[in-house]
Image 1: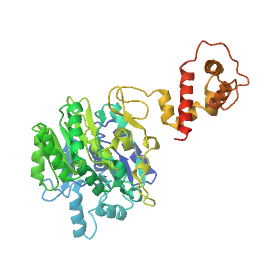
Image 2: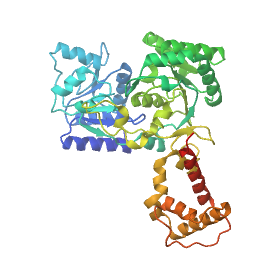
Image 3: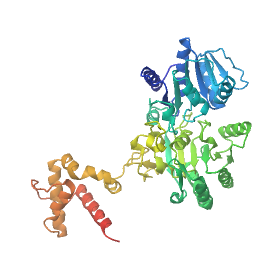
Length: 493
């Protein structure tokens, strides 16, 4: 099985990490990276060298997925999971459920059969048994795989973060489906308290949602009918009761919906998942259940009514949409939780460091700085949510003057020494001449134009020549308008 370039890069970076003595790397593998294939390639190399390896998975679904891939790759493996028909302890490669590993270690006095390397799938979900293995086998390479390496204390367990490709790059290369983000009515977040930097107080969210449920439900239904494109949809609500309430309201409005939660046994869940995948009903609603362990590429829409401060949760939810599927040109994220306002585009969130465990755990501090505190708004052309000053969906760009009004930091680029270096002498002369024309038209004192010039460039126009102009252009008009707005904002109310 041939690897993609980003998988080859990950393999090379992992080998380099080992050579440098960093035997506990985490490979940040976004949705559709192909981490199971990467794991299979590493373990096949291990097998071909006559060595033994383990692949630890925390869910039955991931074990079965690995079995399919490893079989295609010609790997000689056994499965360590209760009563599994492919149990084969003699095989060089072992696919193991973490629950079975826990039982084995208890039985064998905290030791596993001899092995030479291991990989941990979804390593952001930390299990004591895996941490014990990592600590015990401290000279054996053990590699973590996850799309969301933001968990508390990961940097104490693993010692190197590898980011071979970002979600945005995978999207640009066609491995992911583009998302259309639309905003919608949500609860008043100013009344919601935080438990910690990554968690809102659930009781506050529940109370606020229940007290405002009529307005929210009405907006959700209108938003889905306008932007949901009648697509297969999953929904997230703050509690199971609120999910059930949403399902009831959707059904009353002619939108077929079903609720699922952790009280359903696996057969009941599978039956609902399969019926939804066949299109027998439109909306599958839950509280948290579908956040992980649910993989349905045919789903094209999310209704998100559950506010979160966790980057992990947000990226995982949007990730439910991003897998490609035949005929799926785009997916839709209906934000009724103000999550886009907090995080912006999920595909632009890139891990930068692992949490060391020595300071407050704030997931946003573990990402690259350019995705934080981004100004979000609705695009006036396509009505999608946009972060920053350019819509990535249709290309609309916020006018420069509005950017100046929004972001004082941008004014540094337009005023003072930076502007003085940036603008040509001809531009400065034209600006000063137009200011003088405006001052004459308004009857301002002679020094007004010079003061405005100094306000913009930080120096007096001592060597700047003026010439006759008929009127003032857009740059001067925008500057005067900005100054008037700034003056008005300074005046006492």
